Amino acid sequence: MSSVLLFPGQGAQKVGMGKDLAERFPAARAMFQRADSALGLALSRVMWEGPESELTLTHNAQPAILVHALAVNAVVGSRLAPVAAAGHSLGEYAAYAALGALTLDDAVRLVRRRGELMLEAGEQRPGTMAAVLGLSGAQVVEICARASTNGSMVVAANLNAPDQTVISGDPAAVERAGAALKAAGAKRVLPLKVSGAFHSPLVAPAAAGLRQALALTSFGDPAAPVIANASATVVEDGDTARRLLGEQLTAPVRWVESMTAAARLAPGAIFVELGPGSVLAGLVKRIVPGAKALSLGTAAEVEAFLAQGPG
Image 1 (cartoon, rainbow, N blue to C red):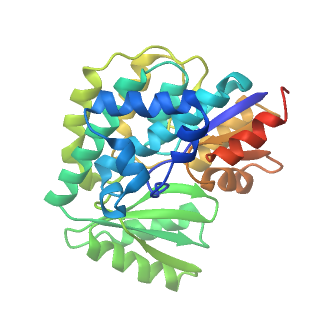
Image 2: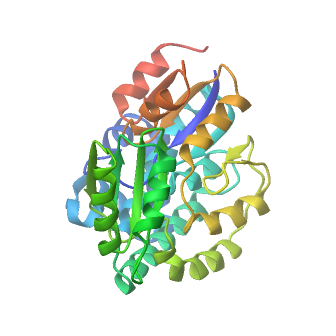
């Protein structure tokens, strides 16, 4: 099946995630065991038993989502013929791992470190994020620029759909921008429960540590092109992957551009979201007219997919 693989980002986690996969599929169970061993902690216990407050900590949520996605890929990967891949923020690491540019051990350790650094940055300079519905990305970018005053800033962090953008920054600036966005016609401005202003200059203190971790990690070339968040361009070699992952931390997630680029690269391919949730499959249908998309995250979804047979 000619496919564009999609991998979700932080926020998709929930207690119990992946437990049904581990119980049903030995290949998935082996991935969770490998991740626990690589990290030297029982991440799978946190995923399956919680508490939610522990799972949602950035340095737990990120490896949890990544290993869940790769566990699904371990089961269904032989049925997919990826012609491209993309991951939303954290999910970009899963994309490289699924396509062989990173080992599972390296990927899970990298995103664990990424989460630790992001949490520390959020503690050093507290920030927040909010989802904006009903305005174009260009409108949101313009209003954020006007709201960045008096030493506080807000930026468009995730350009998720033509009418859905997440903003990120200092709480005061996010509040100013929210009021201005509502006045400009936004249908809703929804505060997000996050530990920092991700994909904004506020998390720049984490970037140096992340680049160091990336430099110490071996990257191969992915088996298919990956569309990078930071540039919405095709990545086909490990060195470029490493560089753009370092830039990604403070850069906006250009998801609309990325999905448009993927559709051009792989016309007619089905978009397959691997991991918890179905957000990305829903977004791609709003971005690419006529796109076919499915989500594979639960054992039931995987079993139904496998029962269809090859094709």
